[in-house]
Image 1 (tube, helix red, strand yellow):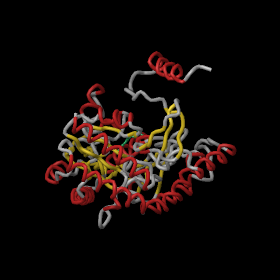
Image 2: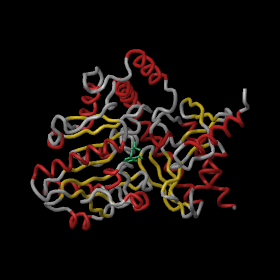
Image 3: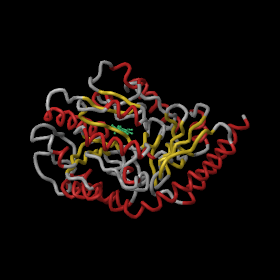
Image 4: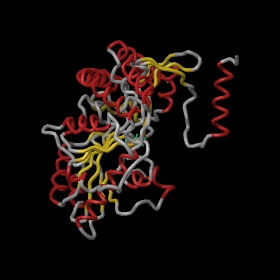
Amino acid sequence: MPDTATVVENVIDLEREFLLQNYSRYPLVLHKGKGAWVYDINGRRYLDLISGIGVNALGHAHPRIVRAIREQAALMIHSSNLYYNEFQGPLAKRLCGITGLDRAFFCNSGTEAMELAIKMMHSHGCKAGAGKTEIISLENSFHGRTIGSLSITGQAKYRGPFEPLMPGVRFVPQNDIAALEQAVGPQTAGIVLEWIQGEGGVYPIDPAFAARAKDLSAKHDALLVFDEIQCGVGRTGRHFAYQLADPPIKPDITVTAKPLAAGIPLGAVIANERAASTIAPGMHGTTYGGGPLACRVALEFLDILEELLPAIHRLGGEMRAELTEMAHAHGFIREVRGFGLMIGIELDIPGKQIVLDAMEAGLLINCTHEKVIRLLPPYIINEREVDRALNTLGRVFRNVSIA
Ligand code: PLP
């Protein structure tokens, strides 16, 4: 048997030689997980506060998810969309009940779900007549890596090498109502926004801005699309982040993915009848999407989620309060923001070394936008684990202050 150091070297060497070099990974080979903890190949454990970038919302090896996967895998993993399966309809009904929307479509990832939302906006504009072709999106947004999603992503660093992208997209600054009013008109087919910009640095939307987007989309017969791929499905303590607003601002289309099937790839587009009617038979489809395994696991996940929502809200609030205290003690922490278990800690300094120091101390966190530490803990994290994570972060921050 090779020792673990050799296994780690082999894993890294093989990737270096044979894998597309599109990722710059942290030097950690993960082997297994249990609850909010992951274990590397050497058996060292880490408290996981990034949960697979918001995917592993129930942590790892949740017994009910493991059981659902086992049972369904033994029956049928994939059936294709040539036939019905027992779980797609019930899952669509559940998501329509949660959102108050009318119809759902299932695919395999966030970006793939956004592609359908883009097709719906285009088809809607096309039906309405010549020239209604424009999509309004936000600066600093992130909607995915495929060409359509990239075209509505408001960050030059992702778009640059792939220009020219899909034409007809106009970007406005987040929360700038005057700019939004100027950009939207009869030529607008749809408006897309993240309720909380995740990858862009955990920037929540101003509900007044979202309300104006809703008014303008109604006035100009455009579709309003909320990308809740990162902030949706419980992350903020509500089923969807737009339900935080009082009164809630309902979109025509909600797009979601990440935690929906607790780690099994599944994306969803949930639409009202007006948006859903833009897609007729044959206009869209997928081979894998909505398979029985993913849909059954998603139903199980949504059942479990009901019991977790209050704790997500409470623990998230406690975490932000403590982190805000830490911000007062350390000049390099500019701001703490977020909702529920979606938290951004904006720094005045690059966050990469903090991520590495935290990893060394047994805590997995992430840095986005160079200076924003992003926490996306699993929803099953408990009080003790939160304390431990905050103590570790406090230690890491103190060391930065001393250095
Ligand atoms: N939209 C948002 C808001 C996201 O955060 C992400 C991924 O981080 C995506 C879209 C793309 O999702 P995926 O990586 O599953 O394609």
